[in-house]
Image (cartoon, rainbow, N blue to C red):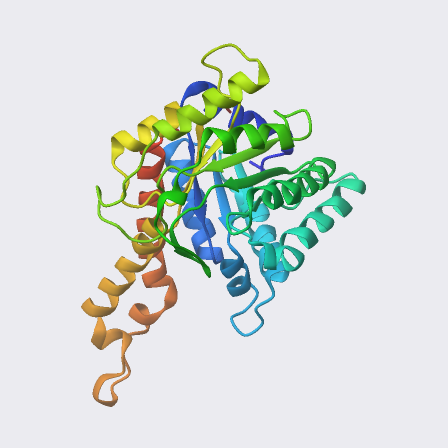
Amino acid sequence: MPIATPEVYADMLDRAKNGSFAYPAINITSSQTINAAIRGFAEAGSDGIIQVSTGGAEYGSGSNIKNMVTGATALAAFAEVVAKNYPVNIALHTDHCPKNKLDDFVRPLIALSQERVDAGGLPIFQSHMWDGSAVPLDENLQIAQELLEKCQKAKIILEIEVGVVGGEEDGVDNEINDKLYSTPEDAIATVKALGAGEKGYYMTALTFGNVHGVYKPGNVVLRPDVLKAAQDAATAQLGLAAGAKPFHLVFHGGSGSLPEEISAAVDYGVVKMNVDTDTQYAFTRPVAGWMMSNYDGVLKVDSEVGNKKQYDPRAWGKEAEAAMAKRVVEACENLRSAGTHAG
């Protein structure tokens, strides 16, 4: 199928919220990880999201070039071509973008999408994330208002972060403390500033103890009830019926989460969960195993010639792709999106 249109993407997210499931959002950095992610979604029978971080975009442009817009658009173009061969819908998203990178990443990407939309085409990316966790809430929401207006015109969904995700990802480093928990007041401020869809479609990454990085299950203290409290506060502020879920929520920093915590978060309105650390490991582990098992083939030991069939990047690359795709299937099963493709 082609990359999801704005209408298809909105329907994907609405179906997820109404059906109590969520899509894994898989970070990609190369053509091979794009193929692995989409393959995994197809094998799971799930629509999905692939996303590019600022660091991933720099890498995608060439490790010596480091141009985020070039890398992001190049990866998006590749995904647009190969996604047509798979029977599921795939949306393209840009991950965490702090204030000091907006002018070099999100704003120019929105402008490029606006040019395509004005010419009768579709946006390059279906959603962009503004990470305002490092600035005061008022400033965070003021910037979000500006970006939401631009995104709406370009038929793009905006993702914002209200609260702080601990740990480090692509240079965004936050302490692990009480700021990791969004408050009902944060939720009310968000709907006052951005509305409930009438000003543009947006997703909200509220924080409930999330931490980026590598953790064993149980080491991250999550409180999914924070999400319910936020939904209830927004519901009351908007005058909606009790039990409504006005926010389309996003779950960041999920490595080490327990299955019951993930399940509760989805029940409270999470429609997108970022998956990066686990799929990085899934991709790299078989490569390491291949190299150690075939060291005399991939290396020219004692002046021998090695074994071209073993050091050919396609040989170990196929192993990496298959393992990463398998981990994507597992993520879809954990988030209950497996088998939900409506095509």
